[in-house]
Every structure is written in structure tokens, then in C-alpha cells.
Length: 463
Image (spheres, rainbow, N blue to C red):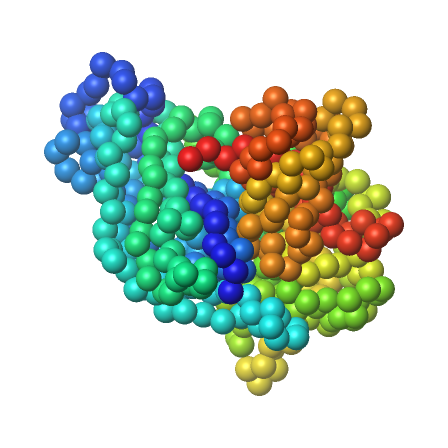
């Protein structure tokens, strides 16, 4: 197993029928005297090399208003802190009273760590049952946060995988988990509490611009769209959605209605099943693929014989529809197809589910390339600036899929790439091995047949 370096992130968002104003305000209301807030939970992560799963049972999340600990998680949930990488996933919505909050507490249990073993061909997944040094962690906010009426707020909880998972002198994970969390309350319009990796099965449509989905945890959410919402496939308008349609939604939770105001809608299946995960092996490795191994991180619905954390072999024949998530452009099929698949790509797979005598058979109809995050250090001296922010740099990839991807990994940037904590691509021309997180797509360079990353966001990480 490889050395582990990176951080994991998990979010809880507080939709307050009583909230808002960042820390430091002096106009605090008395806790619990009048208004009430609602809390929605969002998860995200920047994973570690070869570690593809860090599943932990989150038994409770509370925030403290000086009088009592108020729960913001309605039911215990298993959260895979290594599932996401710089992306955010909606989990829950709860009510809390208004007031001034100064700390948060998370209680956890039963950690299970999964990692890719590349000594086997094709790669396999092994697991370790972790041991917690403590089951409850309380973090004091840097500034008290005042929740007043009728606004939306988020609690960001960052699970620091790098510091939490113990390793031996050879960099091997031992299974010991000393949970380290960082927490802060944020306004609902903060980009750190957006929704950009939420999947759900369509329950029904409520008009030409809205529909209802049921998420992996069973809760139903109304999704609202408008003229600015990007639909990846014009052949799949809302009017065509059925109860066999499964979608991925990005956007923000509306502070008044608590609906999801969608900025992007991606249809990942029209036939009844969806598997999300990471390609670990493509066969044959070049040319038109006839089989692909998928490390399963999520599934809709629950499929008999398939579970999160296992590798599922999928048959391909080239008749599948290949798309790039959140890009409404038919040219994407020219750069992502069954001849441009690679181990290390994050994908969503949809198709027809047939169950006979309790045995499930999957027929793949759609493969969607998904955004993913990779973390590591800049390789100094390899940055190329072509024009503005268009160019490339190299990343010593220390993230989950790094063990499956070229190292260093070539990252391509455009003038549409968002640079965070950086002046732009020119900020990567120095001599320092700057710690970075890149969110984008893994594509195969047709000239070299080598995977590269096309960046949507490049962020300089701070401690």
C-alpha cells in the first residue's frame, strides 16, 4: 500500500428558519426562544493514494448553543469519506432552534478502510477493520455563529484522513484511526456547501421545470430548474423522465423552499439501474474495450449480489452511449468512448437490470465520465503557459486514483479553469512543490494513449 497524504471533507448544512450572519455578530437571540432552523447534510472528500474507501458509521452530529447540544443528523448513516474528492453530496435535512452556536460534536463508530492492491492483475480491493482511539470529537468554532430567522447556513465538517489514519514506518495503513475533524459554519451561498454529486431516482415530474427524486438514503427532494440550468442531453427533457430515470444533480439548496435549485442535471440511466465508482481495469487496455472492472461506490436501487466496496466486471460492446457529465456537447462522444477508457476514471454506469431467480444481470446502456478530484504536489519546472490560464502542469498524484493513473499526472488547463488561492496558471511557475487539489475529468490523450486530467478547478491547499 502507498503512503497516504490528503484530507477528507464532510458537510452538514443548516437551513435555518432562523439563521445566518457569520461569526462575531453581537445581535444574538436567546437559544431556542423563537425561530427554528433546518439542517441539510452534505459530504465531500479529497482521498488518499490507493485508499478507495474509508467507511465510518456517523451515529450523530450536534451543534452546541451554550444550553444544549442540538442534533443536525436525523438518523445514523454510513459515510464513505474517501468516496468524493473536492465534490459535495447532499445527505440529510433536519430542524434546529435559532441561537448562538459555538461548537460542534460528531460521534462515529465501525471504521472500515478499503484500498486497491495493484500487485494483483487485474487490481483487487482489500479491507481493514479500523480501531477508533475515540468515538466522539468536539471542535470549538473560531467564532460563535448567530442563527436568526428564515435563512440558510451550513456546517462544514472536514475529516482529515491524512492525520486520522495511522501508518507504520513503511507507510502501510495499520487500521488505527485517531479521528481529526475541522468544523465551521458557513453561509448557504458559500461554494463550499454547494451540491454537485447527488444522485437520485425520479419519483415523478411536477411540471416542465421541476421533478421529485429519491436519494440513496430514502429521502425525497424536489428539484427546480430554470433557463440557466444545464442539461447534458437535450434528448432527455424533464417531460421524458419516468420512474426508471436516475439523475445526477448539481446546485444549491433553496433557503426558502428547501428544494434543490439545479445548475446542472445529468441523466445517468433511463433503464432502472445506476452504479457509480472507479474503473480499476480495462480489457483490452488499448483499443475498443469489451470489459471493465468498476469499484462500486454507490448503487441505485439496491441490486442483489452487488454491494458498495466490491469490484464488479461489466461487459461492453460499443453500442453503449458515452457522455461526459455536465457538458452539453455531442462532440464529447469523440473524446470519450469505449476506445478511450482508462483505469482511474470516475464514472457512472446505467442500464437495464434483469433479475431471474434472484440473480441480477446488468446490461450497460450508458457510461458517463464524472468529475473527480486528485490531490498532490506541483512538479516544479514543468508548467507550460500557452495563453492566459491555458496550458498545462504536472502533479505528483497522491490521491485515491493516483495509484491507477500516471505519476506524475499531466493536468491541462483552459481559460475557463477556476483557480482558487492562486493568481492563475502563472502562480504555478515557481520552484516550490505547492500542495494542490485538482477537480476535473480524466481523459485519454489520443496522441499518447495516456490518461491526462482536464481541470475545471485548481486549488492551492492550505493547512
